Amino acid sequence: MIWIGLFIVIAGAWAIWRMYSTASPKPFRAAHGRADTAGSPGQRQLPMWQLGVLALLLVLGVVAVGGRTSTPSGFGDAQAFQLCQDALTKLSRDPARAEIPWVQDMGSGSEHYYAWGAQTKHMRMRNGFGLDVAVSGSCIVDGTTRRITSLTMDGKSIL
Image (cartoon, rainbow, N blue to C red; front, side, top):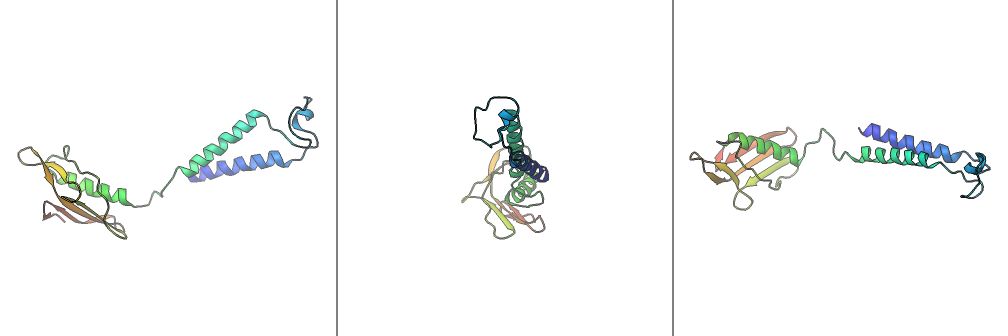
């Protein structure tokens, strides 16, 4: 996608340069039998439809280039949190009703550490009686291996 965007931007810039670089002794309108009503002598003017097409190409190119904020192979905070959220949801008695709120990553370097409890937000899961209860837990993800290295729930170590 980024290559397509760069191509569109370069093609649009080349087209604009090409249209304006050809020096013409007469303005565009006078060269085509119309009265010269705008522009200074020697300045070339483009029809509005050409300017519109060039503007559209440049906008599409900039959007295509600027639309990507991270590489597809990047592993960040959101992906690490998703791993923890999926693992904790699978461990609950009723995965459809489990609520694992977003908490801040407290890890450093390539380690992602998430904790749910009294200082942050508790997870909400159903117990054996079908009641929603607050659950504490923690999850550590190694960003280089993209695996969970530690997982605890209500003080019990799962991994």
